[in-house]
Amino acid sequence: MAMACSTERRRLTYSSTTPTTTKWADELPPELLGLIVKKLASNVVNIILFEAVCSSWNHAARLYTSAPYYTQLPQYPWLMLLILPILDKWSWCPKPLRIDHESRQRLTLPLRPGKASTAKVVLSSDPSCNNNFVVVVIYDISLGPPGIAFYQHGRGGNAAAWTDLEGSHDHYSDIVFHNNGQLFALSTNHSIQVWDFGDTYNNYPTKIMDFQPSMNPNVLDGPMTHHKKWLVESMGEILFVERQWLWLGSDTKGAVDFYVCKLNIAAKKWEKVECLRGCALFLVRNQSAMSLSTRELPKLEENSIYYAETYQEGDLYKRKLHRGWSEIRVGGVFKFNLETKVVKPYYISREHVDTSYSKPVWIVPSPQ
Picture 1 (cartoon, rainbow, N blue to C red):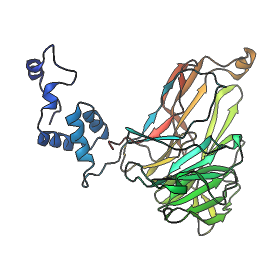
Picture 2 (picture 1 turned 30 degrees about the vertical axis):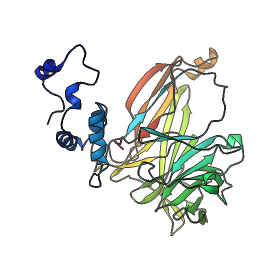
Picture 3 (picture 1 turned 90 degrees about the horizontal axis):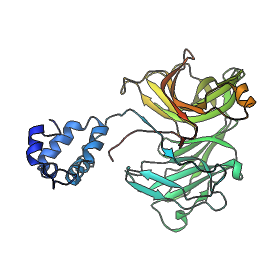
Picture 4 (picture 1 turned 60 degrees about the vertical axis):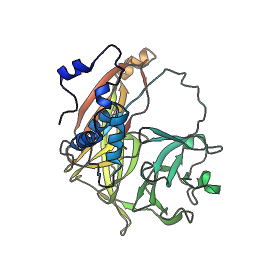
């Protein structure tokens, strides 16, 4: 069923006094709007566009997507990149941590006294589905001592403030929730610490694991530098992903390699993963990694890592000679095959360096 009326009918109802939202769209019966939304349900983007037409269409879409029988089908991820005004790079001031959800509401969380900057943020659950959730942050160690703190949303009293996570004193690379409220933390030395947040609303989280998994020294090999590490939940497993990057002579883009290991908790061991069967990983700096099923999303390539990257074009030695950076910044999405170790550009853009962007973020679109 088509969303738009015919050209002829639209011409008959149009007049110079017609408001921006056409009258015919706002007067369609709710039953008809419900049938249209049902036809569009397989594609979240269509529902989002449908919601934007007018208030009655928005209401119909929300009514359908909030019903208990509605289940969102798997969606392909989007890379969100916002254009920002150019600011003095040295001007900085701490601001409250803000989290957007439902694409319509913003939660402003209180500042953590003395530790205003965070290196990583994760949520225990989707705020649009449950108002009682936990926000966990890794401190930015460049501005103070290391550690992890949490904030319990939806609960008053002392829980309304940030609380240091007891026993979190290491330098951490990443954190991820797994197994119904268990927080896994990866230290820079590849050790694992786990806190149970399962019943946080009656008790404070309890540290239940702290161990150094063994690792084959050949797993992370090669003369690579500039390491970046992630934890990711994938098909019921905890994966450790390390990205390594190396300058190659005067090439400012350099070489990229990824290593993936699976956590064997029983054996307390990191086991090298040779193939990501049935899934693809999505990575970006300072954001939680995502694992998506290539069976549910067949346009994705199995055993691949999609990552966002930016670098400035040009020869490194010429940049040093001219005492400046290249005027062109290259950004986009690259696809790394874990088996062949081959990197292919997936989407590339070139912008002048005066164009300022926020850090890229992977999102999965949702009408809720």
